[in-house]
Length: 400
Image 1 (tube, rainbow, N blue to C red):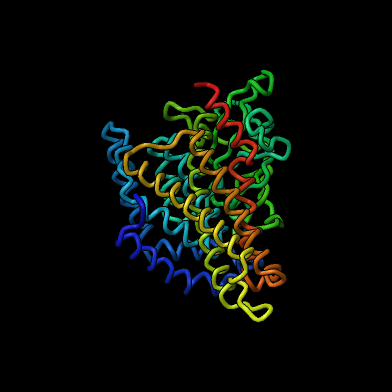
Image 2 (spheres, rainbow, N blue to C red):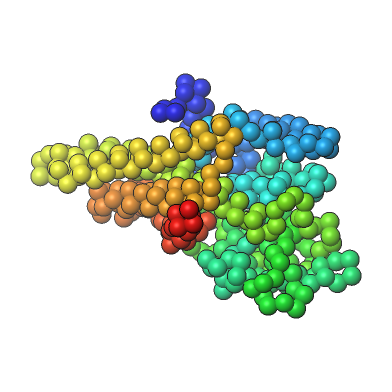
């Protein structure tokens, strides 16, 4: 795959039209935090029939599972790869936070339930997330764990009779303030050393006794993606809320989610790079200094050329990922980490260079590259920092 097909471009143009009509006019409200993103995302799903497609795919998969199949064939082939990637790319040209909010609810929260839940758990919790009827959160990060997500995890679940009593806190949780459904990771406390405890995964609902969801946290970028904290004080969860189905344990299912999330960052990065390059080229053609347009200066040309190189490289990563989906193959953790490491750094560098090219105007929110530079920086932090990506890539190389 070296370019988008005509059908892909038709989808792209339709999505662009919707974004121009629905998202750009609301960008200031999204950036200020006055407008949560969820109604806009539901509008996107309804406009393009993505909610009904998700419902139909879900029902077909559950029917096959109840007949004794895995249902995995419903996801093979990657026929909808472009329909997944193109909205991500286009949304990230305007408001990358919308993709973070959508991706966590669908890819991480619903994705975990679909991987590890029973058919009953999937119908109860995953389907409303997949159709965007409800907002989902995926809670693994804690104040004192950071990159050591499993080893430093302090949230616990103790078995008391037929229930589990859960205590602990989570931070930097995308959708946390507004989540209806929370996939919550903690450790089973049976008296062992904390670092050796089994990882359990529960599905929690807004309003459960002892569960507190904070107000949105203030942060550097991704203002259109609400981020918050969760506090659990003796939250009681029945066995029906414990995800135990499938061959993967809590650690392995979380790692698979990291693969999905990290590979998706390449598409997010491509959107930022394409928009920064477009804005920079337009500005270089129209901004004049010393009697000529700044695009005639070689240092400006160097910036534009490097942006184009980054665009081509990240686009090729995205195309490779689409081809892998079509072939029914998922990237390894190391491959996904390599994609994220390069794409995140490229997007951040391109956005910073766009600010520099715009000069004083680039530092003003009116010119939009300022927002994209703040948003792009997050790509190097969430879903694992650059440093964590390096360790996963290197360990894979050294283990061969």
